[in-house]
Length: 319
Image 1 (cartoon, helix red, strand yellow):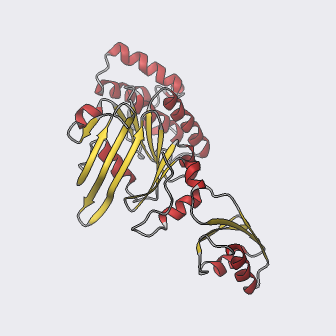
Image 2: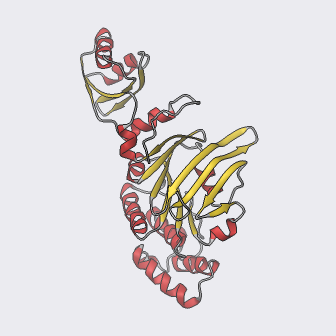
Image 3: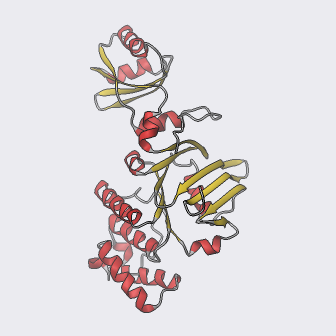
């Protein structure tokens, strides 16, 4: 892809902290205008990668181009064109909502008239008008989140980085927040969002699954689900905990998790894997119904993050 089509491109991106390899030869390509997700457990390298892409952290090796700029060499020019929202609320608790946004406007060099118009617009878009004179430290979690997003987009960035932005808010606030993100995407903003929530990852146009700093799978959520190797089975029985113990060490069973009153089993491909599972349960004195179900993104995540270190767990579909 050309620079006109690509917002982010990395080759062999690596970051070491002493003997720890936090990001391990990461190759990424994020198209302009898409919502791209980073999915992975805490400590997998998501935040470290974002900080390198923003020019805030030097890579140990590898190449980075963001919005056509070579990073970190052209990081100063990049900062005027991107927004960055961290997981932790990073504005000033002892300033009001309006004072926080006014401060950010001055940092970005907006003149007083332009800043006033932009603040009025953001107050309306992010429903902060009633909190305009309220101290930021007294806002609810959802209000703080909307304020942080307003600050991150105040200068109309082409690219917005969001590092686990919904980790401290309720489900309705998360849903409202994602509506705001898609409004930005519809207006042409490229978004890179890190998360460990499966429902959020499924909303992304494309996503990358990271584990121990390595890219384990990448693609559109539906394609990753359809390309999942192995089989997903649902086990209905009266004693799911006992059934789980019976299956956890069965050859070919990769994971087994209780979902309500049933079990969800990820197993290797095999002509009679359902039959072998049924036999193992029968030998344990458990009557069960075993049937295949369609893979979901959590199955993809489990398969990817339980893969051997030297292999990817999921087949990458064509972009």
